[in-house]
Length: 195
Length: 203
Image (cartoon, rainbow over the protein chains, first blue to last red):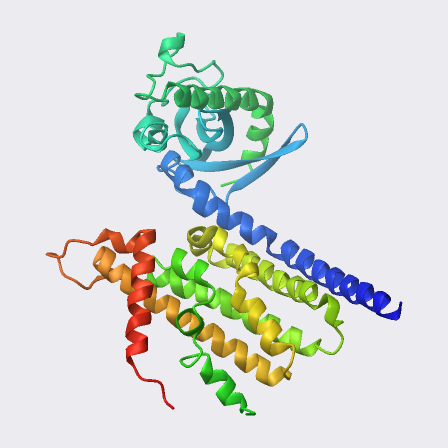
């Protein structure tokens, strides 16, 4: 009986101690990890989209509450004025969700470019959506409009052999438009603090 | 029979170097040694876990009831692995991305549990620490060496952390890409085992 109690106590103490330690470490590294993920996963997409900006959009990011989620907006400074933002949205592709970083000019509500950040599309076909040349096709489209593939009566040429991927990206851009519509006034308010 | 602390340390570097002499812990050895950098990174992460878990297991060896010792060891090891995982994400994110799933898999690396069970649970803290450090560094060296050999043959260059790729083989060399694929790992490991066995053991 004494053995039994000892076993339970030792394991319980050990487990709770390690749980506490890990929770503490997780909390203290959380911010650093988030920054690293932004730099290495979303950083390349953000940098291609906001390549003409003079600041570091990853440092100058804002968080805005949208219903029950919190969204990050990366602000780019153009001609000395914070006037472009990039943010992420997602759409359903062929192999799962496609994460798309969307860059918008706050002045005319038109897209700068988009970049695919995360995807699990077919290599060689759908994976071509990560190509900056594909992202540049979206340049100049009004973000508030519904974006569609040409064969669905829209504006975007589908990637060869990857119509569903292209549809997913278009859906993500359309979703981004809805988010932008909802939050535009808040974005404009908060952007003023960045110089 | 009783060895000194120094002997416990040095045995891990040659006489009992885990991947080659004991042919243990082969999962990361085969999977991540595509490059020198990956190999050394993985080796150092494992070393940290080994030293940490060896010290703690040895400290607690009289407290842990023998019936549940494996469970206790796993809790300790898993804690250290999670610490490594979080720290790597925070400070060396690109390396973390390359090693991917193999970092959490250090938990089930049999070298770590093997040293805890076979050595640290029976020896004092200083010896266990030396044992963990020696085993870990031996593991790191093996992974680094295997990674370097595969990288040089497979790509013709050698990438050093924070430096440019160094072309070893010159421009005329056509990379033997088989060596950086999975089967190449087995071939490289086998050839290195063979070379090591050619060197006679000290009596």
